[in-house]
Length: 461
Ligand code: ARG
Image (tube, rainbow, N blue to C red):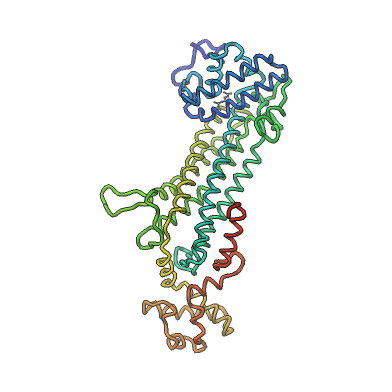
C-alpha cells in the first residue's frame, strides 16, 4: 500500500528498492534522544501558543516520554517503511495516544526537525569528546611532570638532532590537544543556533514562539534564515574538520609510540592491556591499538571528505543527499572517541626506558650544536666556522665509534687549537638541555614551569 505519512497523492507504494535506498532508520536511530527532546519542546510550544489544545500537547509529551522509555529498554525498531527516526517515533506515538499525535507535526517539517536533532547530537558529542581530550591532557601533564628532566634525542628528519627532555616532547602533544579542544569549542559556539521553526524551507504561518523552543533546547538563539537553517550542514563539517585535525595529532602520536616501542628504539614499553600477540611468533607484542589509531585517522579524514563532497553543489534548500550527512559524522565521532581513549591508556600506562633514551641522545652526536655554540660564545668564532670545526670533530668521533665527549683534548685541539678543557662542560646532554632555557624551550625548568601552568589550566593539583 502507500505510505501512511505521505501516501495521499500516490497511486502505488514505493518499490522494495525505493524503500531500501530511502531508509535512514538503520543509522539515524542514533538521534532518538535528540528527536524526542526536540519534539517535546515543539509540542510544549504548540500548547503554550494555543496552536494545539493544551490537553493534546500534554498527551503528546507524555506519549513521547513513553516512546523514549521503550527505546531505552528495547532499542529503536527498524522498519524501512517508516523511513527515519522522525516517522518511527511519530508512528509509535500514534499507536500509544491515538489521533492527538497527528497534531505534533503542526508548523514543523522533517527538514527543520532533522537539522535540530543533528545539531543537538553534534553538540552532545562535542561535550563527550571534550571530556575525553581533557583526560588525555591530564595524562600528558602527569607523565611530563615525572619526566621533566629525562633526556632523549630530539629528531628532525627522524635523525638525531639535539637532546630534548621527554617531558617537553609529551607537552608538545598537550599543546596540540589544547588547540583541538578550542576548535571543538569554536564549532560548538557556532552550531548552537536553533533551526526549529524554519519548517520545510520558508518558515510557517502558525504563530509559533521560536524563542521558547530555542531556550528549551539550550540553544543561544534561533537561526535567522529558514532556507539557510534547513540546508546548512556547516556545523557538521566544522565538527568533522575539528575531528580530523585531532585525529591527525593522535595519529602522529600513535606513529611515535609504534616507532618507540620497536626493538631497535626500545624507548617505551606499552601496557599489555593495549597490545596484542601473534598467533605464530610467541615473542611478539604488537602495538595494535596505536596502529589502529593511526589507521582510524585515515578513515576520519575520509568522513570529512565524504560530507564536503556531498554538500558541494546542492541547491537550496533541502535535498535528500543531505540524509547522507549522518553516517560520516557518526563514524568519525565513534572512531575519534575510541582513539582518544586508547591514546590516554597508552600514555598513562607506558613505561619509558629513560636509560635507553639517554643513551640514544649521547650516541647520536646530539650535542654537536652545543660544541658549535661553545666555540661562538667562548672563542668568538663566527657560527659558520664553528659549524665546520664541529663537523670535523663529529667525523673523527664517528670514525672511532665514540661520543663527542669521549674525544681527548689533544684530538679536539688537533682540529682547532683554540679548544680548551672547558669545552667538556658543554658537551654533556644535561648541559645541552639545561642551556635551552628560552621561553618554550626544552630545559627541565622550562618544562616544569609549563607543566605547572597546564595543571592550573586543567584545574588539577
Ligand atoms: N531522514 C531525513 C534526513 O535525514 C529527514 C528529512 C527528510 N526530509 C524530507 N524532505 N524528505 O535527511
